Length: 171
Image (cartoon, rainbow, N blue to C red; front, side):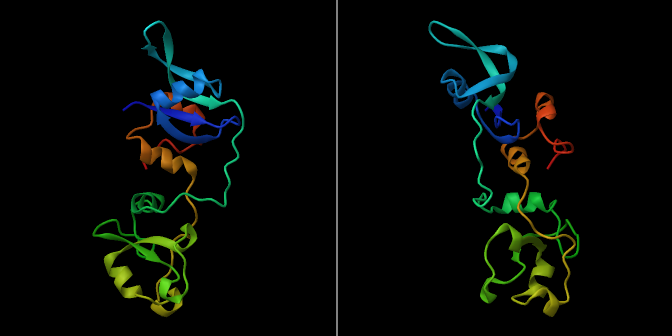
């Protein structure tokens, strides 16, 4: 499936969508094509540009309070596919709550990290101070560009000018 990069009116990357969805947004006047592919979309009577990067005409406010749901894949990608306690990338990775749920910890980006099985077992339902473990980096919500990386297998070169610097490396 061909993906199309969707930018906000401010040129901030929002997400990716299908070519069909992008064409409908352009056709309804809700978006404009910034980059197109050399092939065309055909209907019974017309030919249209094949969108590759579109920009919404009106700014869409993305509330920061409403975060994307946590998935293992997104969490592991956010943490670089490494345990945040020991830094290993080998072995089985698991999801760990910094403040355990049994102690009132919530399942939010700021409280969930990637941990290898030995570190997760060592920590158990204890706090960091009690387990002797330390975080190599503080957990926080991932950048929206992470979800673009997860939605498409590779980032096309035409998208690079629209993504933050360093965001085009493999996630």
